[in-house]
Each structure stands twice: as C-alpha cells, then as structure tokens.
Length: 340
Image (cartoon, rainbow, N blue to C red; front, side, top):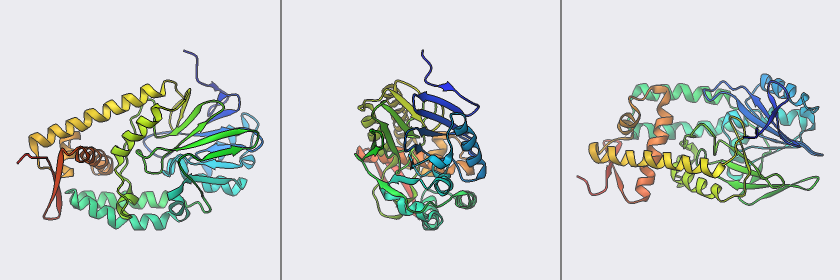
C-alpha cells in the first residue's frame, strides 16, 4: 500500500504537496498529538498541541524542517477543546497574531476556561453522587479536576464556526466545516476540498476507539446532549462525505475512513447490547455498579471514562425505549423496561 506521508524530520511529515503533519508530545496517556500545517500565502494550522514553551519549541523545530516559522501562521482551527488539541492555541496566537476558530458554542468557554471549570465542578460532583460513587471516587475526581484546571489555558477572541461554514483561504483553497459531536460536544471535522483530506481530530482514529466523553457543559446548561447517541449519528454522517484521506488527531493519516467509521459503530453497538444484557440479568443498577460489571472494578482515576461509556450506552437504550431510570435515596438506578 502506498504510504500516506513522507518523513522530513523526527516530528515533521509531508502528507500532500502543501500539507504537513507535526507530532508533538503530551503529558497524557494517549501520547503524541498531531498539529497540521496547510501552507500557502496565509498558512493554516489545525490544532495546537498543549500549553507550554516545550510545545512551542517542538512546533518551531518541526516547521523549520520545511522552511516555515510560527510567525507566518494566519489561522488556527481547533477540532475540539480538549487541552491536548487546544491548549497551545493562545501561545501560538501571541507569537503569530493568528485568528483562532472553534465550534461556535465554546468560544466563551475558551475565553475564560478556568471560570468554566469552576461552573462544572459542583454539577459533576452531583452527577457522581447520583451515579452511586462514594468519597474515594469523589476525592479522586476533585484531584483530577484541579489538575485539569491548572493545566488549562484560556484563549481570548476565538471566532465561532458552525455546520456548513466554508473558510475561504487566500489562493482559492476552501475548507468546509462539519459539526461532529460525540467524542466531545465541540468536535469539528475540517474537509480540505481541493485534496479531499479530512482533519478528523479525535472524531475518528485508526487504532483507538474514542471515548464518548461526558460533556460537562451539557449537564450544567440544560442542553439535552447525549454523547454516544450523538457520536453514532456523527459517524453515520461522516461515512457519506467525499473523503480520500483521514488526517486524525493521533497517529498517521489513513485511508478507508468509511470502513473505520463502520467498525467503530459495530463496536459501540456490541457494547450497547452487552449493557442491555447486564441490566436484564442484574438490574436495576446504578451507573457505578453497571460500570463495574462492564469493565471490572473501576479505578478511581478511570471513573470519568467508565461513567461516560456506561451513561452513553444507557442513554441510547433509553432513546430506543428499552431502559428506564428511577431515583432512590439520591442514586439513579437503571432497569430494562418492563422487567421487575
């Protein structure tokens, strides 16, 4: 199979005549994250890596491999607001004067991210209690929360992007915007129409099935957002797009994006059916107990990941009329509809 890219330096790769992938390290278990550079009269950067001088230094060294500098960047597009993708945006903006774009509803979130975190904290604590978690998990979440808050960086003056927007880049290039909520509510897919290369962020990865992340804002602002249900609709929509090459947030570019979308959908559906089976055999169950039966005993630091998976599955089952929930002594319990 023809390679999807050629290596220029340790962290710089060429994937098309004027499109480059730069792999930068993160402190997170997922490992390196990709930044993409689209060259031209007004270069475009897709995603920004993490907060800090090290990220800027590695980006600068990688750009030098094909004769470019941070200062020439005109536009930064963020596939979503997770800090391994958006954390470096403000530092790059300050050096280059670049315009920063993200999903329309998150612009105020990015403008004062620490304030946004403060609003999420009591809501998440309440959700964990309703899920049946005790003091150990609540304390672990508090520590994780403080760590994420400390590592987050605001980015003022972010410009909103919405479904169907087309960015006209000087030189005739058009980049079309598609909203793809699921892994996060802020997920965007950018389709470079001249090359039919799709910058998927974490919406679709080749070797990892992204978590349908519990969206804090969705439970704090009354928005009826359901992560896994939304994710599956987004995957079905992506299958229909004219894409030749997927440029993901992690790992090398890959072909056959529709097949990968179908593989993820199949895996998700297997987990949904397994969730239904567990509830039928052992319900009613709290989300904590459901997660333990699905994934084994949940470690404190994995609480949010397993809660996202468990809640996502039961929300799909609820939308199908197969599961009901009830509140007892402050804890929500889920059961298969009609089963005593």
